[in-house]
Image 1 (cartoon, rainbow, N blue to C red):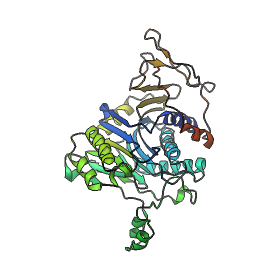
Image 2 (image 1 turned 90 degrees about the vertical axis):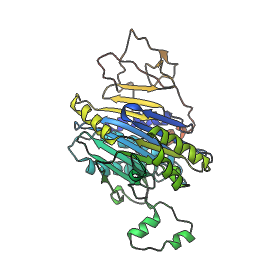
Image 3 (image 1 turned 135 degrees about the vertical axis):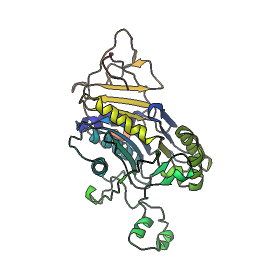
Image 4 (image 1 turned 180 degrees about the vertical axis):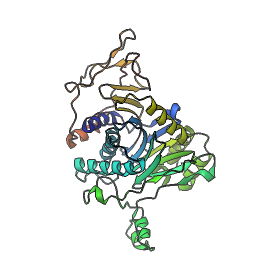
Length: 380
């Protein structure tokens, strides 16, 4: 099941034109996500996504992820997409009862293995993740220099929770305080680890997960393009914005105003308690079927064990009978609502071949489709 889910998620992630500005607000969750190419780079290698997942172990989870494909690696953007698809699919297939604190590092290592196996060191990525469960656990972890912050009602609630995986911080951990050699070699800010590196195994990945303080009102994930050029300006925007949507818009505008030298992506949760309440409520009403509701770009994607639904703000009146056909979508009829079953003949899992991933970069953004279902299907 995991490989099949990964294939479906990857196909949708690849279909998004990430070089175009993205902003999505999910009001029911008080969640905002945004991503921007910037003004200098030719390709957006950032990926930002969130999902509510009813897993095989009966738990309902919420996951938020920001991945920043490492510049200098050939396929950083593809690495970021693989990492997100792997995290969501592996989470969905989790069958054992396990604490969210222990599950998070396991999922990050699965991401690491998947990126390395498919790209052979030609693409690496950072990852900052938050994972909440219907057991009211809320855990965060990061690999690389995409950051995690707490935020709330004022400047005192805003602080960095994660530690950047950089060479100078590695020296500090080793009690070697002098980073002048790194500065002389131009290595200040260089990453000490990223997902998908070919020189090690996932067992060597240093994962620092942390249980979030239940009193923390909100959480924020951001790629380094959001904070690195002017961290003081970034901090001030988050501390003084009126809402998550306002923060996301201002951060992206500000990062471009100060030069737009890097891709910028951000994910903001305004109310952690609401996220946990939503997971708990969903778990109590669950039927036992695995279900993924994912948001990224301008897309909401729902994957059930036998049914796939996609919707987009761009094409809400289109319906596609078969995702594999290249025919023009037909308009759906409200009088004759069909269920789209994903049999093995209809959808065949991709094998993540590098050639097909490369071709996805030049693929034009295709119209999204909304597949209507009958009234027995719960709405999200």
